[in-house]
Image: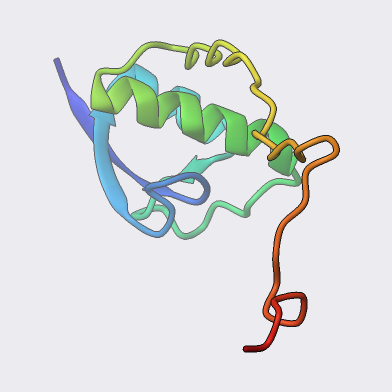
Length: 101
């Protein structure tokens, strides 16, 4: 398959020139998170930054060979912090309460 170089504008590869398959490169450029670094005559289009960032993250996961969407971590059972129980009716001695000899 043919590859094409693109400059990532968003996501973990932002500022780097990366090689993608030609179809993925065209999609990256159309999604707005990448541009052709060798074609400087093309004006950057106005884009939705959130959409471009999500597309960049998805492409980065694909490049790393990860799943499309990260699985949500299951909620761990919350435990209460142990609080010391006071001795009911108990007493304790302090230095001030000790009898002086």
